[in-house]
Image 1 (cartoon, rainbow, N blue to C red):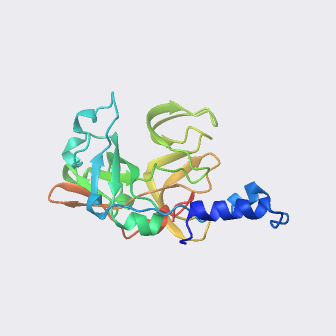
Image 2: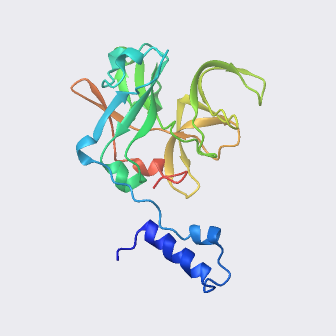
Image 3: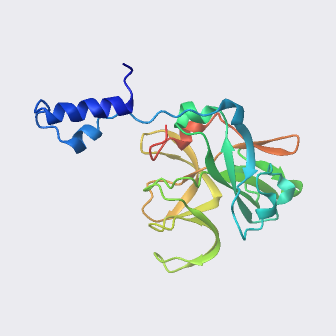
Length: 225
């Protein structure tokens, strides 16, 4: 009989019920279950960045499901996009993730990671807002706000709504994650996050914006990878 999660649990419960389980309780046995197996459909994989569907009231709602292009954006405009390259299953254990794509004023540190636009005055950048490095909440892009931690005002930054970590998308820096790996991130401005918000390098192919998969190790945190 194949060892599946269901058969494993049935056998473990039978063992506990017969008195042979020793000190193992049912909750303890549950922790021994193998992790769920992800099975992505390779035919549904895509490396393009697609405007996220079911986002009512957003400026990009009419573009839902379409491939993002730099001409879709104006300066300091953000959109949530989905990304599902086939490498995600092996590297991160998931089939699809959500990123935030923004057109920002160009800074030198951004050029090798994003797509230049507007004669070099702007750059398209993608950020891993799927999970905050702190406790895995989902940061959001804020056009402006008032910090509950410092009391200061801010513009065009990422804010984690759970514990108020704030990240500057204009300041791309190299840092070290909790496992000692070098990661390129939007710099942490304030809050309890251990480091900044990782970026996803992008390229342009025939006018379409594409996520690069050569830096997926930057996204291996909060149970991914």
